[in-house]
Image (cartoon, rainbow, N blue to C red):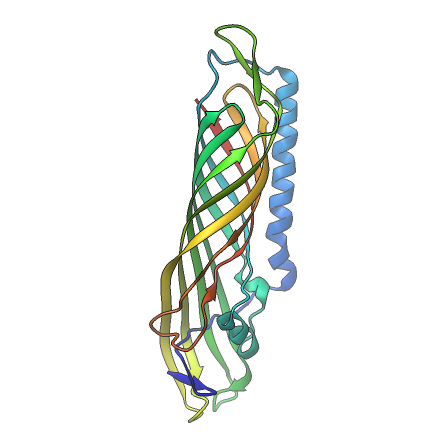
Length: 268
């Protein structure tokens, strides 16, 4: 247990062994992957749109992306001040799945489940042990958002050319909004300093819980053919939750953040 300025700190810290340049690399990788996907979609669409025998009403998709948490609350500030951890170290790969149901021509209802986890190694900035060795820890930050929202398409996504044929349009941009719940887990594992006794001790600390969440999004669907499409999306979510158990004395943990994803979907 750590006490700083009269506040009990139950925490675990993680060591960062990745440079800032390598932290930026996933964003560039995702951007390149999205551009390649869009280029493939353009080529496939140019070869022929194809058609379906009816207008699709259900879309099922998977996405991969990169999440950039806001990390603006007291626990993140304290972690960055005491340990060799930067704000970008909480960035993480994002994985998810979406089920969309067409409500009307220009509006879908979408259920989305995501998973994001960062795992950072660190050491105390200003303290070493009796042998002048670093005092090392691990920090893990996990978010699992589940949301229900709407996606509004300003333009038609396809056209009916007969009673039995429907042809998708090549590009279908959309805007979205939604709400739901996000589960989180903040863990810090390793060695720590008791700032009152200067004792170094090993421990594991954890806070977990859930919070309501709201988000806004914008994206585009690009048809690969009558059934398959590539989707790129940018989303920002707002949420915060009370810290429990081993983090008594800290304010609510900031669970907000930005997320970019790209993925494939199939429509029925």
